[in-house]
Image (cartoon, rainbow, N blue to C red; front, side, top):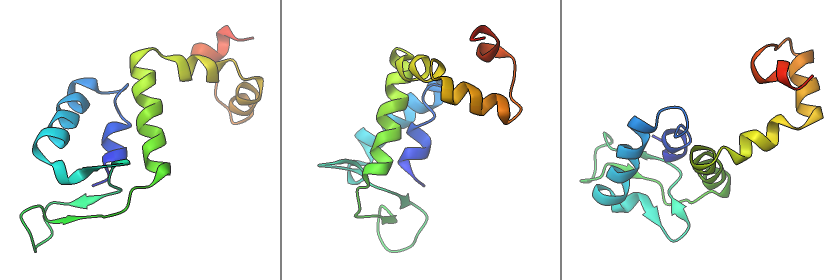
Length: 105
C-alpha cells in the first residue's frame, strides 16, 4: 500500500481517510519518519510483525498528501487551479464540459 494513495483521497472520502490517517499515526509508527510517510508498505508480506515497510521517503509522495489536506481544509488548491486559463482550455480541448467549466466562460 502507498500512504500517498490513501491520504491523497482526503477531499473525496474524509469519513474513510481520517480514521486511516489516525490508524497509521497511532498504530503503525513504522510508517512515519522524519520526512513524513514512507513510500509504501505491505502488511501481508511475511517476515516481521509489520510485514514489509519501505525505508524510502519520496518528496513526490509527500506533496499530494499536503495538497489534498489543504484542499480538504480550504479548497485553495482547486479554486486556484480552476482560475488557470491553460487548464480550462486543455480540459475543453480534451472534451470536458459542464460543472465549474461552464461558470468560467
